[in-house]
Image (cartoon, rainbow, N blue to C red; front, side, top):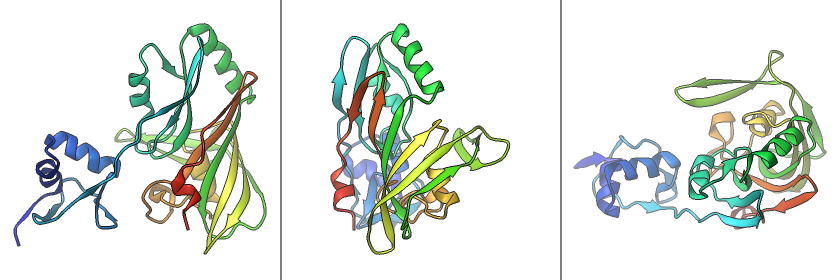
Length: 244
C-alpha cells in the first residue's frame, strides 16, 4: 500500500499549497469519513479521499462608530477576525473552536471605557454548551484559575494560586448522558468555562484538551453579551440545535 503524508495528499487533492493544507488539518477541518485527521505529517493511504469542512464567514451583528460586533465562526482564530476588520482592535478573545459574539473596538476612548466594565465584572456574558453527563440542577463554580503557556499553547487549571473566576451552569436539555446548558461567566479567565466544566466532571463535548469526548468541534458558543447598555446576540448554531 503506497502512502503519503496527509498534508501533501490534501494539498494535491484540493489544489492548494502544502502550508495551507497543513493549516486546515491543524484547525480540525479535515476528515476521512467521520474521523478527523489529527496529524498533518502522518502517513496515510494515497487513495484516501478527504472531506473538508467549509468555514463560514463572520456575520456582523452590530456596528457603530465605536464598535463592531461579529458572530465568529468556529475554527477561526480571533486574531484573524481582527485582521479582516481593518482599523479595529479585539476587546476580548474566543478560543478557536468557540463560536459566537466577538467584539472589536474602533477607538481608544471606547476601548478604555469597555475594559473598565470588564475589570469591574459589569459585562454580562452568556454561553451555550453541550456537556458530558447528566446535570440535573444548577451548579456554581467559584474557583481561581491559573494559566500557563507551553509551546505557544495555553493550558489552565483550578489552583489556589490563580486569579478569581466564577462560572454558573444552568442545565436546559438532558439527552443520552449529555446536557445542554446555559453558562454565565464572571471574571473571564483563559479557558474558564472549559476548566470549570472539567472541575465539576462535566467537560465540554469536543474539548479533548480538558477531558471531553471527540466531536466535530468544541461545543461551546458565546450566545449573548451585554456591555454599556447594549445587548448583542449570536444565534445558536444549527449544529447545537440538532446535536443529539
